Length: 428
View 1 (tube, rainbow, N blue to C red):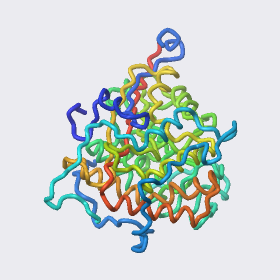
View 2 (view 1 turned 120 degrees about the vertical axis):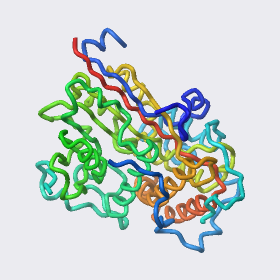
View 3 (view 1 turned 135 degrees about the vertical axis):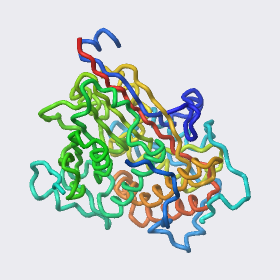
View 4 (view 1 turned 45 degrees about the vertical axis):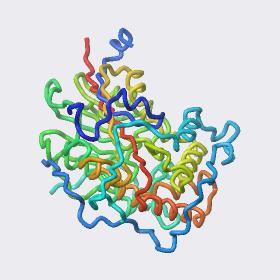
């Protein structure tokens, strides 16, 4: 992918931003343990989605909920997160302090008045050997959540969330100009035979990859058995926790993980497991972003409901013992476990169509819908469990956030990392 591609942020420019600027796709080369001791199809055309709905929860009488510019910023200490339990890292404190600070990235506001700005205007899948209870999902505040390892993952698994995950899948593909991956897997010695998709969600990536590579066996794992019943003959799904010791009977040529930031307590351990289960010449690719941290190219977000939502989400995830901002550390983790030649590419998803450029507007439109359709799912369990907020308080906050997003007045974006680590594990 060329460096002058629209939507691409030069790594040096990205560094000018804050800690919340997600890195690019990490491509890294892994060595064997002994070597690491010595070395430290379908192509999308980009059409706009048809009849995207703005939000399932928007109401007209929320227009008066916008706070004034003096609205307070909630810190971790103000949220009651002092003491050892639930303490956030210094990096998370810095994330909160930097949310409203202008960020320097290769995005500019489209000030044109041509009306283009959005005003808002046949084989069964193989599920692992688990008891039937994993299909009896837990219910909370009108949403359903995974039963296996209940409470570990804070986003729902119901039909609304599944639709959002499939929409997000297309957003990732649009970002990569229609591609499912960035790693040069065509160069794998001996060919591509075994593929693993961690936290596969609805399984849409695994299914499409299996269609594209019919000679490869593709396995997708997740805590929720929400994948389709009828999939390609070379595609299989298992209910599995990627943070458990891996028990696969074979190694993989290519391991893929996407949107993992909210999934794990220890991303480093998962990356270590992936390194251990890649055969020599294999690749590991991660595609991720830092949620909930969004950046702003100016100070338009200051004092907004959106800014307050960011602060509360960071405080709540810290209180729950999770760090959702680790995507910026993936490259370091990859190198730490033994990958070499790690390549990281960075992209930006504008929130809405405020950014100049055809691709930027398209990505902004898709990401806006992705964000709005998932806003309640991202937030509800996190704020009620982490900060003890009531459902009424959460919904009032979200109404204000939706109004902020619909106004198209805030020049925010979500940095996206595509750490595709060329996990080329070469043996001596």
